[in-house]
Image (cartoon, rainbow, N blue to C red; front, side, top):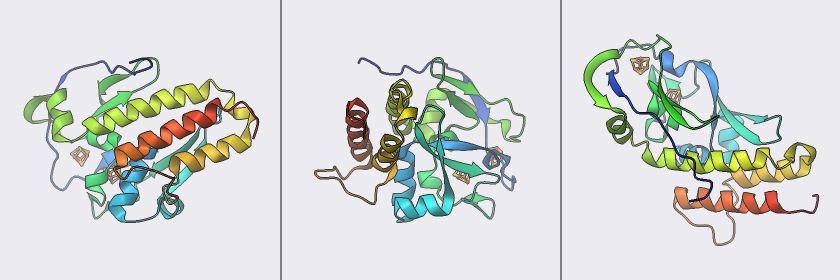
Length: 208
Ligand code: SF4
Ligand code: SF4
């Protein structure tokens, strides 16, 4: 398919989470959430996306004008009593750790070597594919591929000179409190529908 991001990299992991660990993996730099991840967390918490943003996330506009929502992790606000309080809806980065995905200059899986995880080298060896399956990360990777395609397109669309378009894009991409006409119910379909609408907005020639 034209424009599809193909993800490279394959390796074997040997890793088992250590009980009582203080979760250094949940402390560190902020991570950008795709609109799909925001929707999944909002649904899991039965919370509106605006409230979720207000209470837990930070809005950020890239230099290119692309709107992003960031999850601060110093430490992550969803870390409660040493456990992830949104575990079934945790973002892709958390599912993949200690592996990770880099998207710039070709998408590739990498194994973290930040030295912070005491679980590295423990447990049975498993392939990256097994890890992805075990973490139910497959659908998240697919949705992130679509998100990266969209972001790359938005970055080359002169968005930074169109502030009103940026604001509309932010609403279209991240505000799930508003239900669009004929919007599908399943989160994957809903996210893809939003991406499609946002793509149409990007293509609109009239300045807003
Ligand atoms: S740092 Fe490693 S062992 Fe500790 S909670 Fe995170 S994944 Fe588990
Ligand atoms: S969302 Fe959950 S797993 Fe991810 S950093 Fe926050 S507490 Fe940790």
